[in-house]
Image 1 (cartoon, rainbow, N blue to C red):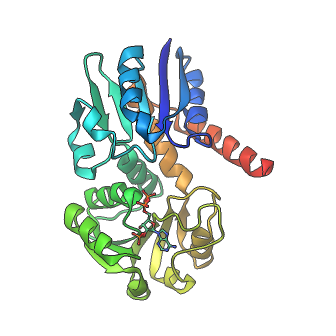
Image 2 (cartoon, protein in one colour):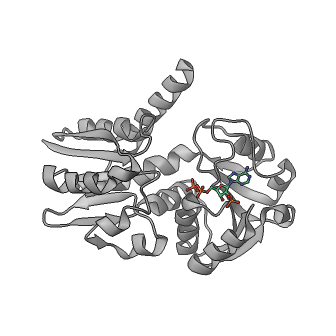
Length: 271
Ligand code: ATR
């Protein structure tokens, strides 16, 4: 029996166990995926545990995505460039860190038919989540403008990964093919970091927040006629690529989406 899991703090509300276990079942694979709550000070011991117990691979979430880097034996070039690891693969003699978050962004956009080569894309936020988004948009050939409350962070991210950084107050002047919301504003609250009026100047809007699935940001974008992509698509696609790396098999993406959606909707009803 192969064992996989997610490490984070907290991880109680993670949708990853439901997604990965549904995928393992759907393909008839013997294996189990658990949620491991790892306090930041226990991270080195947890990584040693992955080796000692022969755990096949783990997903890595907040707050360990950057702090885990020094404990791994190898980083692939993408993880190094993004500066964060969301996936650890146990190759037997060594642990390798990689990042599938950016592919989650890219595939969500591709399945919605979004073409970015030579086009403008706007990113709201410059935190950890923004890094994988900016990396994906640059790989897709977009001209990226990053707007952040703390403009220096936007400029630094733009310098590191490509694009230009601006203060969030200047969002009124922004336009483009796509706007992506990467801040925590709107997470379990009815707030949006941008004014409603701006959506008429974009064709597609994407939010990486998926609690609620239809955030205020996406509702306003949809009302203005934008095509909208919810945060669960990115979550599922980054998980699908992890599943492929963990098992060597193509992931049943829609099975994973339905499993995640069921937990999400069950949680909302339960509240
Ligand atoms: P994460 O790793 O989840 O992206 P983070 O690194 O703390 O978390 O980044 C959070 C992002 O949300 C940042 O871009 C942050 O802006 P600052 O860099 O100015 O802190 C943004 N953010 C959080 N609360 C915000 C708010 N009320 N209004 C605007 N932006 C906010």
